[in-house]
Length: 346
Ligand SMILES: *Cc1c(COP(=O)(O)O)cnc(C)c1O
Image 1 (tube, rainbow, N blue to C red):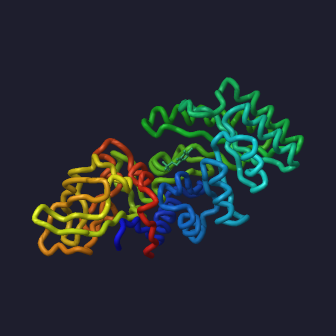
Image 2: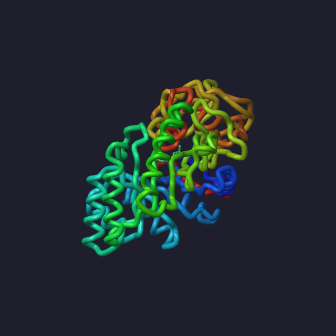
Image 3: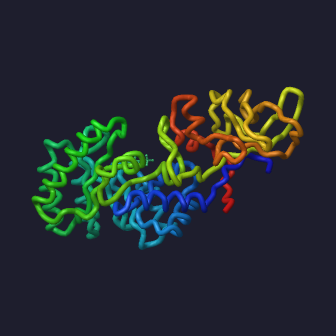
């Protein structure tokens, strides 16, 4: 190894998926794949998840949804929720990608494109439950539902889902969000069939708040083994990825390893514990393409140092590193550049 590697364990990823599914059931798992599967790589994540029997994939944008369709084949359900231009709506319709719709303007554009192409759109209507991050306001909800139902009767859409996103910051706020959500579902049910897919929660709320789960749960972080910042360890969940760098030099000052801030490692992580063949050691300096690690007896060029991973060599997790610098584990993973080779190890 001459370059840093992000080692991906398919076995751990599958076991995490299984643990999440068992915990969430009967709510179904939608595996969220945004940001190149949280930095792990889309094709590995889709292929491995399909082996584990995952049927729903969340892509965020339509272009990624199209890439997932190519990888996953025709039977997978794919959900793209970012408000997108008309040309991309056309791609979504042709690739049978479900659309998250959080504004009336977007609803109208989706209906118009579906009419133009003669291909019905599968729509999940989003209610704003307080996060104010896209979503139809409660006061506009009834009118939006009426419009969606009219389009449904005309054959241009199918209203298959109602969804929202919550802050997962406090139980009280999440409870209030759920009340708004339940009212919104009730209003939809009063106008016709209740959509099959009701989804409100992501990793943390799905795991810790069973009463908030809908028929579907959108999960990214916990499937990859990324626990919440300041959150507890999770039973049956381990990091699916380990970041490993080679020892390139050994001197009296310490051990130099071949990874640096240009690879996406935040230079503010100085002082963190990393894993070595003899256990945890301090990361003493971070340069552009190399780091200095506290030395150990018998260190040799070619040894491996783990920046984060499962803990086998005394390293911590991406989330533990992130907590040092007041961010989340996802950021540590998604910052890694393409120079960090993704390698599947089992
Ligand atoms: C990222 C995201 C998720 C997944 O969140 P995790 O905490 O990683 O499980 C779910 N829903 C939406 C809308 C998201 O943007």
